[in-house]
Length: 418
Image 1 (cartoon, one colour):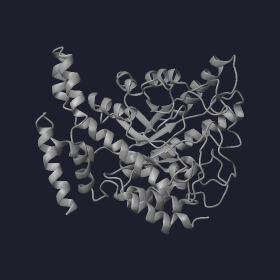
Image 2 (tube, helix red, strand yellow):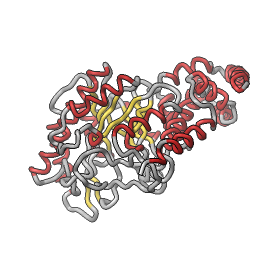
Image 3 (tube, rainbow, N blue to C red):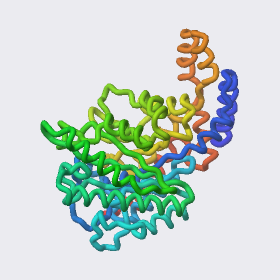
Image 4 (cartoon, helix red, strand yellow):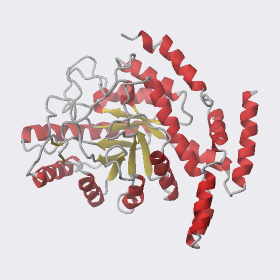
């Protein structure tokens, strides 16, 4: 009965959108091809599975202590698969280096090798997921305030070697999955208080990156990520947005835009069209900052919607990669995965449902009233019926149905974890 109602509602929505020149069947086909890169660290609060015994550090903070976080790789994988079963479409998995399978041995970060991720490659292949990757500069005895920009050559070379080895891991992931693995480089380097050596540290970071990227690979892609500040490093960030835009444009590297890594009044969506003129591709890390880079769960807000609209308006679905990057430990972690993923997909659906051809014609003709009026009327069109059909086609829960499923998994699985 419910399926019949969903199908009837979709047919009405289909006619309504056709009246403004939008083919909803084609939109659903396009949305099916949009892959999110799901972040593994939502399931365990960015802890990872090293045997170093360190606590979270390096400008990062996870808030909340909701019970039931993943305590080992098996639990992490089970949680990811459970979340995946409620998210329509086919998606990727984004791993940090600290999530390797180290077999209870101490493997320092300058010693990591592809075989530490062979299990992940096999698991991903079995479950139809492709992998992305990240180097990990935080939460380590040698992290301190400076890593790749550290004036101490011993510490700096440690992190250079770590990042080189991570690129080698990403290359093997790309080979194994027959699709490039996108590897993100983010370092927390900065200063809590005033510095008089901005140029020195940035030159060191530039030289470190040049050394890291000297090795050419065919099965991975590099991206570099900026930040405004980190907790405890509020006054100066070596890898600022200006630094990485200059580096990415001059070296042909992909720049990562994290929605939490900018000043609150900045519109991150506005940066996409500028970057795409000078860099080959763009990587997004989508979260929801509340007053700072707090990594709240992504929701359907104006910021995420504008991001998706800008991707579509730039005809850049093949050039902009969408990764999620929040770690909310204050609510059910599997539920957080599902809320953020589906919210991002809904925003992309709304973007794809825009009557872009007509809107562009209005704009070209100087018809500002007509353009604004149509944009406003689109807000009340029945996109929810199209979303429900997308979920139905992908055999995932429609509407709020997944809430009870997540509750059941909590009662049967995660609540039993000490």
